[in-house]
Image 1 (cartoon, helix red, strand yellow):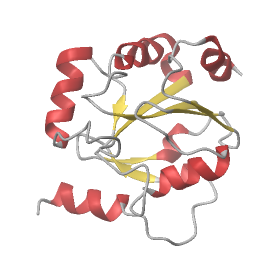
Image 2 (image 1 turned 180 degrees about the vertical axis):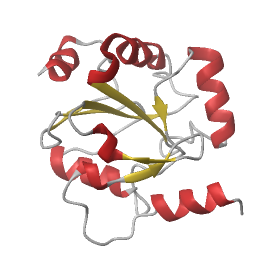
Image 3 (image 1 turned 90 degrees about the horizontal axis):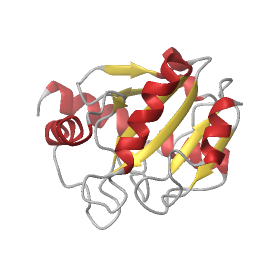
Image 4 (image 1 turned 135 degrees about the vertical axis):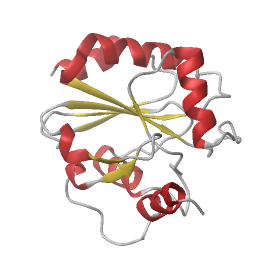
Length: 172
């Protein structure tokens, strides 16, 4: 097992224990193998999305990239590939990175593949569900986290990233 795979497993397994009190306590491995400390996102709004490359909603990557470019440093767009819904993300982390870059020019932060539901649900998604009252029902569900990290709003897969409700939440 590579060091990246080891760290990814160590940092993404649901331990079943207490959840961090703040989103800024999370440290999760990015697609490039670097541990991303969520404390770096303090003061920014976050748009967190569970993604998949073989889903009917996959073209939403394009709109997520538009948000990333348009909002610059004010909003962190964070993509979490997951293979939880009809095995629509079977690719390896390297293949996911290449797919996102080649097909959608993704420059926003993508993370290594995690689980967003079930027994092995990542702690981040347990935290998001606890704060918003809703867990992902499909690929490309969206969570908008306020700049202070306290308010979390859920948007289903069918809601475009450019929907006025999401844009309003990103501007509050």
